Image (cartoon, rainbow, N blue to C red; front, side):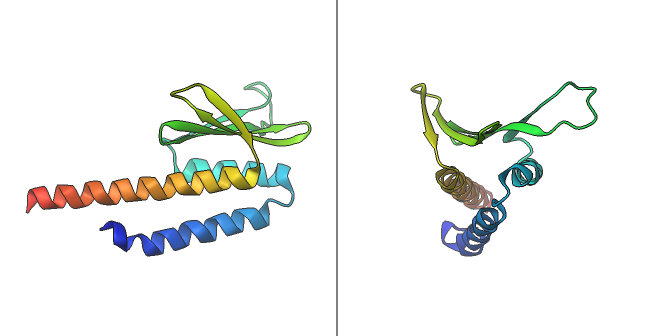
Length: 129
């Protein structure tokens, strides 16, 4: 797949981001569902931290951490609501950002990952043919 062939994937990511924005009205419920969807979509790229003890019957998600390239995206449900951060691992900077900005950074990271994967596939095919 060439980078120019990413149009449908970009459309899917844009649609997903729009859906997430629309569903985020009840943020506490949304956060639980979003964590499940994100973990299913990126099992190796997402870390989920839950509240309560291991033996508790119900353990809601407290924090989601996503690897976005060399940086981390962290979303944490607090008593006051959702707190989102972008953590620049290389220089140790942490910026608190809005949920909307967090979704945009996540979408950009997914697009970049798709491009990298597409480029890697194209290079591999070129080497094998």
